[in-house]
Image 1 (cartoon, one colour):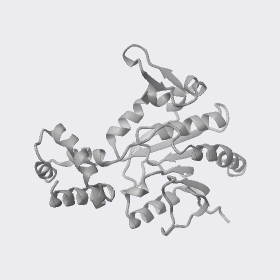
Image 2 (image 1 turned 180 degrees about the vertical axis):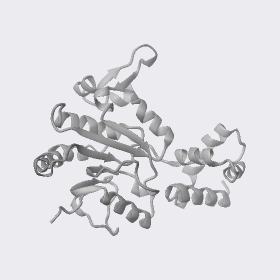
Image 3 (image 1 turned 120 degrees about the vertical axis):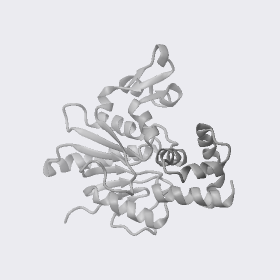
Length: 275
């Protein structure tokens, strides 16, 4: 990949996703563009850049963002967050619900990728807030159309699912048979409470007016520059109820970022309660 081609791709990705591709990501970008060259049957990255400058480049631009977006995830990734949700946040919010009279416990999985995070949240909530108790719902968003299609399908390979306890699998997953042998599908009792939406977190407003007791936005800000991080945190903060929680990735921190949140512990922040 020539310098001017990398600069073109880097600028285009930033303009349309706010993902900041530093120079050390050059090899990663080249590898992921290789998939798009094969898909478009083009022979060089220069030809691909020409395609992205054409009048009908919109669809391919979406494919480019999909290819660049990192979607590495698994069920109960960074499990300490789910433990904290279970042992601290949920009991606190259940006690507050009696005063606040919230109709539902609302969670936003802001970068939901292929669905493992929101379905892990769903399993956690189903265990603590069983049917007939306090209703709950999860809004799940991601920038990638392709990865959202996978999340909505809710079908995962056995080697991914079988990392979880057997009792959890039996309770919340259906084992595939016939053509689906070797796969598991998330049961409808969970999927009915999760809604997926395509969303660029930095453009416009989400397709819901909800305010949330909890927002998970993990392993996203590491791809943004500081001004973009500050803008994103401000947007997420506005969507939290007073006293609501924002959980970020364990490799992330809001240190050095202007924000109005209180730090609770590493990677866990809270909007100040109403006075």
